[in-house]
Length: 262
Ligand SMILES: O=P(O)(O)OC[C@@H](O)[C@@H](O)c1c[nH]c2ccccc12
Image (cartoon, rainbow, N blue to C red; front, side, top):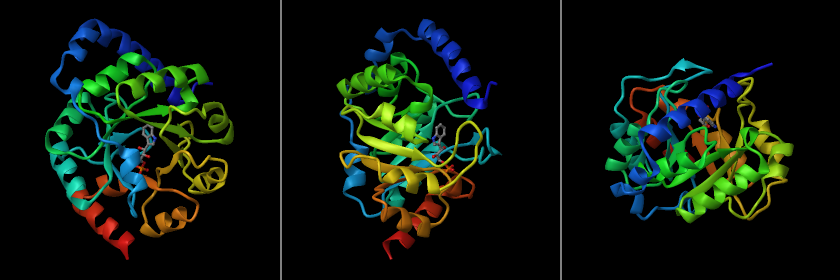
C-alpha cells in the first residue's frame, strides 16, 4: 500500500531529474552563495539553554493551510530577533507550498543557520541547498538506505553543511548512526500516518549516543514540553505550526522563548 511519504518521494525523484536539465550543476556551483562560509546549527544548539529551531511552513499534508499570507523574510527576521538558534525553511512546493526562493529570501535578511527542509534523495539537492544559502540539510532515515545516508552526509560535510538525520523508530536509528551526522532528530510525527506523540522522543532518547546533538521534532506547542524533554538530553526543538498558525510567528516565538528562560 502506498502512503503519503511514498507519493512525496516518487514526485521528488521526477522533479529532481527535471531540474537537473534546467539548472546544471555548473550553474549551482558558480552561484554567489555557493562559496559562502556556513554557520553551524549544532554549535548554536549545544551552547543554548532554549534550543529553538523555528520553522517556516505555509501548509502541510496533515493540516492543509497553516499560513499563506506572510512574507518569509519577515518571518525569518522575526525568528532571528526572537532568539531562535536557527530556522527551518520548507522548500518542497507540491505538498508544503515552499520553494528554494523562500530559502534565498530568508538568507537575504538573516545571519543565523538555515536548514533546508526537504525530502533529499539525490546529491544534486545538496548542491542546490548550498547555492541557495542553506547551512544545514535534513536527511530522513525512513526514505534512505544506509549507503545513501553515508554518501549524502559525506558530501554535505565536504560542502561545510551540518547534517540533521531524522528518525522515527529504533530500527531507523540503528541503521543510520555514523560519524558524518551532527544532529539526531526524532520526529514525533509519523510521516506515514501523521500521528504525533512526544513519547517517541522520550523512548528513543536513551539509545542515541551522546556524540550527537539530540533534536525533538514536531507537535511541540508548550514550553513545558521542552522543559520535560531537556531532562531526556534534548538540546534542539523544531517548532513549526505553533508559531506559523499565528499572525506574527516571530512575536509568538519570542514569547515562547521568554517562557523557557524562566
Ligand atoms: O509543525 P510542527 O508540528 O511543529 O513540526 C515541525 C517539523 O518538525 C515538521 O514540519 C517536520 C519534521 N520532519 C519533517 C520532514 C518533512 C517535512 C516536515 C517535517
